Length: 167
Ligand SMILES: *[C@@H]1O[C@H](CO)[C@@H](O)[C@H](O)[C@H]1NC(C)=O
Ligand SMILES: *[C@@H]1O[C@H](CO)[C@@H](O)[C@H](O)[C@H]1NC(C)=O
Image 1 (cartoon, protein in one colour):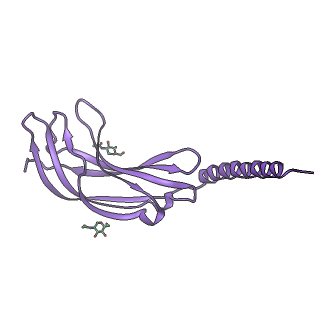
Image 2 (image 1 turned 120 degrees about the vertical axis):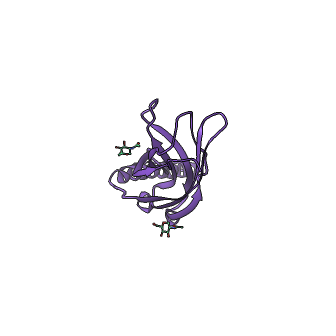
């Protein structure tokens, strides 16, 4: 005759087995989900653009960040970390990346948004001249799944330029 303890144990083993199978299926099914997020960032205003006392250029801008990241959400998605960065070249570095804004998207319902904001982090270049500088704005995302590997990707938006003069 099976004791209660034995049956409880068998049940627990069964539950763990099912859980392992479900986790494996979750990560597997994610492999076949090809998301198609969209993003658009508009520079609405250059609030100010100046050279600091110690010589670094700094710019403050107002952005309109619109994105639809709903396709990143599957039932296996815990949350999505998103950030917008300015990327540009200088004689010293082929890629300078400055994060301007970031956020955490907790659910699919919050994944389609339009945010009107000035840069949350300072846009400062170490030493070089940003006058008339061409830059790209990129929207990066990191998808944190409930189970399985994290993945990241980005959308590059090209053709932005800083003003020729300080203001
Ligand atoms: C921001 O961009 C969205 C999408 O392009 C647009 O619908 C909205 O009116 C814009 N908001 C502002 C303040 O420009
Ligand atoms: C902007 O992105 C395009 C395409 O990825 C790239 O060819 C170009 O060099 C980038 N421009 C800057 C200023 O980083």
